[in-house]
Every structure is written in C-alpha cells, then in structure tokens.
Length: 256
Image (cartoon, rainbow, N blue to C red; front, side, top):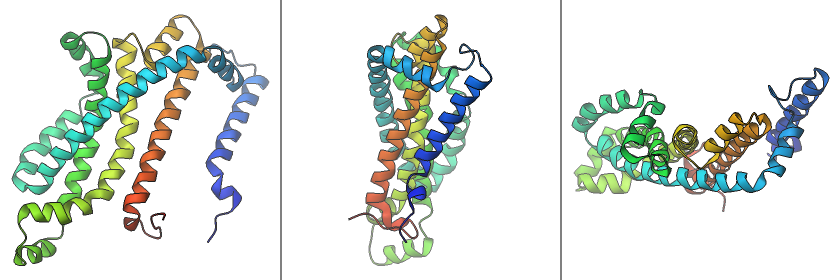
C-alpha cells in the first residue's frame, strides 16, 4: 500500500511545525534570547559563523568516525568471542556491564593525564561510549542460534568455525546493524563530552567558547549541527541495514 503524502513527509512536517511554534512562543512571550533564542536567531548564527562552525564540525565528525570505527572493530571481535563461548560470556559479560555503568565523562580527566588535551581523548571517549551496544548485539545474535540447528549442522560435519562463519554471523547481522544505529549516536555524544572539557577544536569546544562569550544562539547552532550529523549517519546505517538485511524485517524487503 502506497504511503500518503503526510506519511512520507511526517518527520519534515513535524520538525517545521515545532520550529514555527518555537518561533511564535519566543516572539509572543518575548523570551530573552540569552535564555532561549528564536530559530531565526539560531539560523542567523549559523550563517554568520558558518566558516568556524564548518571547521569545528569537520573535526568533530572525523574524530567521531575514528572512535566509532575502533568501536566497531573491537565490538565485533568481543561480541564473537562472547557469543560463541558460554564460558567467555559468563566470565566477561559482568565486567563489561560494570564498565559500561561508569559515566564516560569520568574517563576524560584520566585520558587527559595519559594523552594530553586534544583529539586523542575525544577519539577514545567516542570509542568507550559506543562499543558496548555493538558487543551486546553481536553476542546476542550469535548466542540465540537454536541448539537444534547447531546440532543438525554438527551432525552434517560442520565445525564450530564453519557454523559461526556460515550461520551465526549472517543471522547476527540484523542485531549488528541495529547496534550501529545506536552506537553512532552515542559516539557523537562521547566526542562532544570530551571536546567540551579536553580539546581545543570541535563543536564541543565551539559551544564552550560561545558560552564564555554569552553567545547563546551559537551554542544552539552547535547543538543543531551535532544533531544533524548524528541523524544523517543514523539514516546512512538504516539504509545499509535495509539493503543488506531487509529479509529480517517483517513486511519489508530490501530494495532492488
């Protein structure tokens, strides 16, 4: 069934409606721009400071993608280990849960002591905050392989590695791509958290500089830039997910 115009454009229409409502509230109630700037003022800040915003956005995006790439590599390896071995799962999973419960902002001062102020702490913070969902989802995808299917494959002569490679990993792909969509947004959070307190470049640093200069519209502009980058990357992975694992989504097929 073909979607209606409103169904196809619902996100855009809702966003525009919220922006218009925001603008009207600020104008009608004469909200102090220092407290809550109007969308038009934020747009003006985006235009006025487009060069520094672009430069800092490139730095944040590059830093985030490096940390995210490391998180994917580490997450897939750990997820395969945990999902393919019950002993390793029972031994390591509680430690991973305990590690993940620690606020990642608490690691930033430690990373600054080890690596100094700059890009490295931001990359590592992005990695630390985003690798856990990948580990959990890959491990879950491998661990949920039906015992009956595994018994049949072993009876047919398949080795443990062959079962993992030809059945376990393909079946875990929907879990993996679902984790990527979550992890990429968390990676941006980690980067900005580090840039706010331990960097001299990036959107987080720009927002702190704007805060010290009392430029609230520029701060909101930084928030919007981060949101747009995160949403774009989320949609990229959602598109890749549908291309590669459309078979796993009920009522949907991968585009041809």
